[in-house]
Image (cartoon, rainbow, N blue to C red; front, side):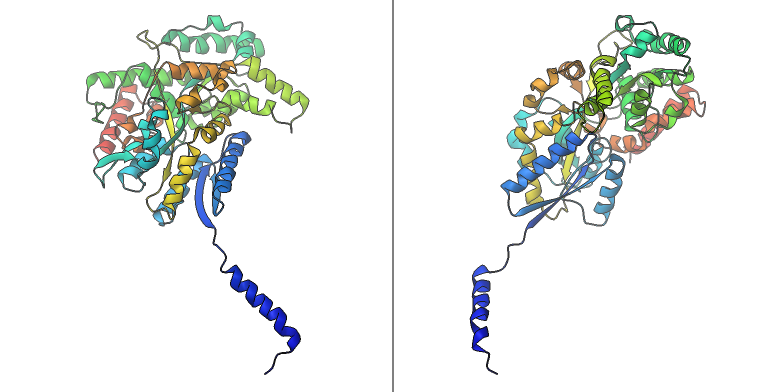
Length: 461
């Protein structure tokens, strides 16, 4: 059959264009799962870094999925079990609860090629958290990447303290007197002046709360308790360790047993002490970041709020809320804080490990990492020397307090020496022991013995 001459020209043109164009270049996909930021500015900084990476690598498209912190581990575990993990994943709780076990079980990719060339950029006790043991290779390697870190701070309301008839200079610096001050002096005075059922201390105790175990472990540090040696060997059979744990648990349960902590604190999740503080139902609390103060800085900068709301937020951040460190230890020495280094991972079974490592290396470049960390408004402290030297940390009293705490030196968590402590953190044996005392009315010594028995069972597995 003959084609009409009028159709031959256009058809040849189309065929010629197709031949010249060739097959379309497929866009490479990189799957990234990331915890949802506490503030919009934190997510904005992450998205800016992703856009920058995509501009640099035109044929790469990053598929970002963000989830709340409580969903990250269950979703990631499910993806691992199905054999379809993301290429890169980060959650604020990976370091505490899963990274060490994932490394031990051979689920993580060795990213030493990314970290070793920049190792000197990291501050002390940061990159060490990512040097983990694999039972498959029978040796340690860099199986995670450090992004930021946190430690424990005290937050209290200046105006509530003033209303109760006290000032900052009245706060004792010795351990016993410090906690007694908030419980036995500030709380009754505040209730008399306001007629409100205010509590002196916000003491996180919930089993589903990382705040509760971080806070309890800080009390344990105050009593100089060491559960493992530097080689990861358990020390819990030492009678002095048991005695120290009894003292730490006694002190931690005290505010609740004396009626100085809200009854609901036994079931608090991570945001709940923040909520109680913002609602002014507690005068002070301890928190593993300065997110409590940062909430008001975020509101102060929020153009969607009314001028009145923003002014209240400004006053709260600049005048009414105070960030401080812990009192001296019971033995009179200064506190040395444990730092939790927040880590991300590349999975062994990831589909695009080469690009994943490229993205991690890109994100760790100072010009990308510093804006991301500072986007959290002081909630996280840098892991790099250059990031810590930023003027950002001297910009206001809250951040300066954080800087000073880290500058005094830090120690690492038990899981950096023995990965099985991630299992114990995940179970939250610490908060369970506290609840055995305050809810089940168990003697402290018995609660400690149960806790030691569980520690030995898990670590011996």
